[in-house]
Amino acid sequence: MKRIFGILFALVLVVSLGLVTAAPVLADVSPGWTDIVQVAAGLHHTVGLKSYSTVVAVGDNSDGQCNVGGWTDIIQVAAGDLHTVGLKSYSTVVAVGDNSDGQCNVGGWTDIIQVAAGAYHTLGLKADGTVVAVGDNSYGQCNVGGWTDIARVAAGCFHTVGLKNDGTVVAVGYNDYGQCNVGGWTDITQVAAGCGHTVGLKDDGTVVAVGGSWDGQCNVGGWTDITQVSVGYSHTVGLKNDGTVVAVGYNDDGRCNVGGWTDIAQVAAGDTHTVGLKDDGTVVAVGRNIEGQCGEIVTETVTDGTVDARDEADTEVEVKGTATVTVFPYDENPGGDAPTGFSPLDKYIDVYVPDTREANELEIRLYYTDDALAAAGIDDESLLQLLWWDGDDWNECSDSGVNTASTNGYSGYMWAKIRNDTTPPLDQLQGTPWGGYRHPEETPSCFIATAAYCTDTTKELDTLREFRDTVMLPNSLGAKLVALYYKASPPIANFISQHEILRTAVRVGVLDPIVNILNWSHDLWSARGS
Image (cartoon, rainbow, N blue to C red; front, side):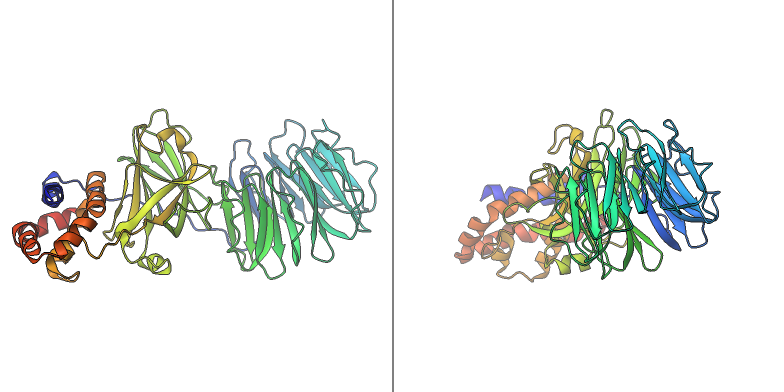
């Protein structure tokens, strides 16, 4: 009994300590692309062809692969690892970016009707059905001089695929995974090439694949009603005839989280990201966004070590004295099942810290709204927790809690403080998912306070709950005290509820004085929590 009374009195003590976290700093996301008619995805960059034949690009530009601002009269674009290719309306070709293997030496090409870009080579399909190629040929991927009757070409990392007019397929180049074993394919209408696998779309809307499937990227046997396919390093994407999208393969970074996409007209798979062109000319993207390939990254400088993640955040945060952090959301659960008893809020983010060697502490905050809580059937915000995915399981963070005070238009946020001595430690932040979950609710017949007042709706309880939500839960010590109260309270509450003398003693001798102090100091602690 003394232990619980001590916890209740500690509520008042925390007011004087002022343990309230600072207000968050939020970064805005720049407006997206419009009037796009085709997209292409490279290693870490994304290219968009606009309706008036100009081109835009975002992402890694270390080799100038995004320097397409002056291009005009473009009718098709392709993206390699570090270079970008554009087909002009009069059948010539332009290219920018890395040219270490001559992959951009396309200035003399003519009569080209389609282009494709591999890791370090470039292909051009000519109007007469022959093919030209420049760039790296270390595996014979440019040995296409004898090809004829080609209707379409695709370039993988180190292999080349050609679709013939009769629906059969040819391939040359690196074949250690069997990615060039397409000799028996028939009735193919489109081909796509990755690093270790090749995919073919059949005229009945089904899909075939050969090559390495170490991440399940060739598991397309059950796909139907597909109208277009695209292939990344180790994932495969399919556009269905109803405008939805399917994907298989590696997904630890969310590149396959396309289940909610609708009204898609074309898809493009990059090395670690996936891009979708919508019917209205706008673009959506999922996956790794370290270089901004999934949308323009906005940099926000933060001095208090706080990393804020809103629903739409694709944000790079420079935390002074520590590290630069990239945060972006997942459309679906990027991990496995929740721990026993937990229920998901279905809000997931990735926090990527390139270098934690100089970091001391980072606080991660994931915001939520009343609508999100209602959709998840959650009626008690204090039970929310920010969990961390370690690659195998969702884990509780050792220093975490929830701030239920409304902030910046949100109902509150879950938080976790990460240091070298916490779970997870700082060195685990180099690209790990986080998710919002509801902690299992331990509900006895009543807690100590509700047992003492014989109800759960009295104004005294409202005061205690407001203090809990405003002051206790937003900081680590307060959250631990609340958790201890919830853990120890049930058996004591059940005992108190059976003895009228105890109920009166606890109410008059303990709770009423605490409530009076909280009411007297309400303006002080409620202001600190706002």
